[in-house]
Image (cartoon, rainbow, N blue to C red; front, side, top):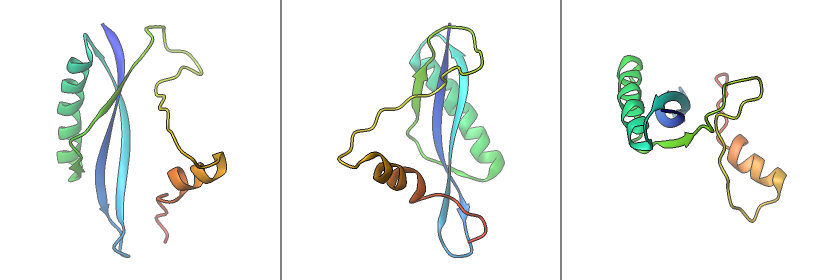
Length: 104
């Protein structure tokens, strides 16, 4: 069996300003296949959403680990993006545009 990191997206809540808050969560599962990992992740994600009163988005993404033992610096998730933006503009668009700030 291999380890898989599975990413789920949740509607976390709504701020007083009316802005939506989303949580992106990555959890690891030991499974025989991507399908098995997704099934385990879906079950866990549905329970997490129910326990926290969150809404779960139905799409999940999985990343199969390379099978090596976990160690400092071990990569648990990697995604490639394609964009015409330069590095700083991409960072601002992808990471800062929707950054959560509980005090605003």
